[in-house]
Length: 588
Image (cartoon, rainbow, N blue to C red; front, side):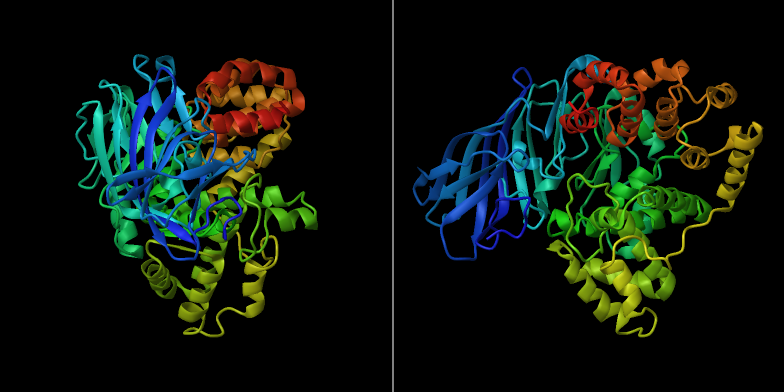
């Protein structure tokens, strides 16, 4: 009855079409208590409703009748370590079913921060992270991207805190302790989101603005000032923005991702707010999800390339339109380089697992997430073959046709054949298409992005490695140029070279998280202890997985004891998702 191996739900029988949440935030106990009321559409035979849960305490289950609510028989299955427990409810095909429940303090989709872990240091903070299958840890729900529903919520919280959700929140920070929000468009469960803290609003355009702690709000608004223009550019390329407002919530540093594309309210890491807009491609990426992912959604996590591959492509088009072709090419080259480096040491069997054909279902959890990069490369190749004059209208038509729907790879391939290949025959061969859709790896005929500025960087790096001559003009390099310099450098370097580079350019202690990530990775792999104190401080301050996990991996190979010591100090400020990932690296 299920289409998604990551969910117990049975959408072929019944689907949630609307969700009503009534929640109370308890910061002292670190739990949410309340109810989730499902409006249901029954399409199959049978009377069983199955919801996904993880570590939830179910207090009552009721079905709506003409006279009120009646108790329903239910059972909670023995939990699976990854999937949680199936909540099986026996109904009379009720149109509305209400589950009263309480979350666990250890809910994997929630993080409760003490005041000391926030920018202000006075008020606590709480935020959710539902992707991929963590919504079930704070809401009993059909936790699969194949089911979409609108929702409304009533939330009570301490009156000194502002509560926001992935919904229509308004723009006034009136703190009443009682909040009501509405999300009228249907979304999948992984886009359910909630946050509460000392939050204020800074407008940056007619349709967009920034929510953040007072200490961060103005800086973030300045950094993200181009957001409204990003929206305009994307609409010109791929059709209207269909979500009303687009606001950003800047979270504390423990947020495990660069951004989370929750509709109407992107959750963003503070690590991209560095004062020069060099990392705002994160905003472009999350905004792009408003078309690819939020509007047209993968049917299950096996088809994640439909979300992330398309989004990476649209992101790059936004970046090019606003910041120029060379900037976009550098961004693409960095991602492609990372892909090729990860693929180079793999055996054919490993390659088939890590980067299978795009039309093949593949394990999502635990992979290197290379599938989305292959998907983005595939779309760029299609654009190159058919030209933008042909490809852009095709992609816009794709977003229009499947708007507010969840689809599989086969759906896209059928659309591709009907609306791009059939009207333009002989542009792409079946063998070429098969190389992308069926065969593992990156096709040999795929061209890599070439950046003129990166050629200069590569020459400078090679000269430094062979002669010790420092790169000329590196003080003026962009973030992308420094990343290219470090990414293509050997993982292990001598203390002499590291000291020389650090003294000249002050890489140790840099405020740029992307540069720090690669620099400390080399520092750890090279056992360059002169930078260990700053490296430990970086790992303690930042919880974004992209930035800290590579450093822990390098440390695990050279000084596991030191890595464990740093992790013990950093762990209270990490999100549960980050904690689990570091524990896996350290074998804990």
